[in-house]
Amino acid sequence: MVPAHNDLVISDTMLDLFYHTAYLLQLYVVLRVLRWYFGKIKRIEAEKKLLQPDNEHGSFLIRDSESRHHDFSLSSQFVCC
Image (cartoon, rainbow, N blue to C red; front, side, top):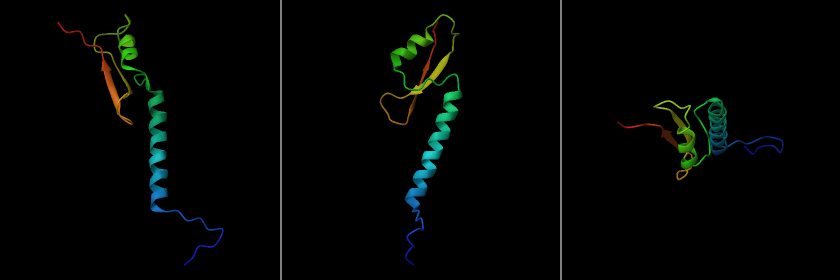
């Protein structure tokens, strides 16, 4: 059957793209609310934030990875000994 001019044809690829985009949007909204997610900041900036005097031992933050697209990096403050 050939679709009529006004019919919308949605392929599996388009549906996959839609669901993937919706998931990423939901993830973005959730991450923006979390106090420990800092998005796209560099490692050196994360270190500066964690070394501020008001942070306790074991403080951490999550940021977007600088080297791997769609990955995250964990930065933490840990003083040994």
